[in-house]
Image (tube, rainbow, N blue to C red):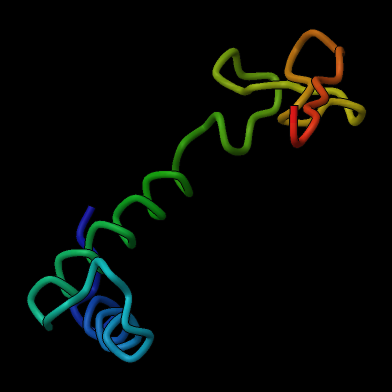
Length: 81
């Protein structure tokens, strides 16, 4: 998929202004911007992103978090032990 050059340039300039570590100079910023925009477009056209019945969709219940994962068991850590 081809990303419009004006979108790449606009995002590259923003990355430079924000001093993004991936964009120490304009050429690096343009490469990073193009990758970001291409990845975004790929996700937009990925059927799994829109078809909730797709086998590629990761399903989690509303009670699950990154800490509980699929087991439903909450992992707690104690600081200082």
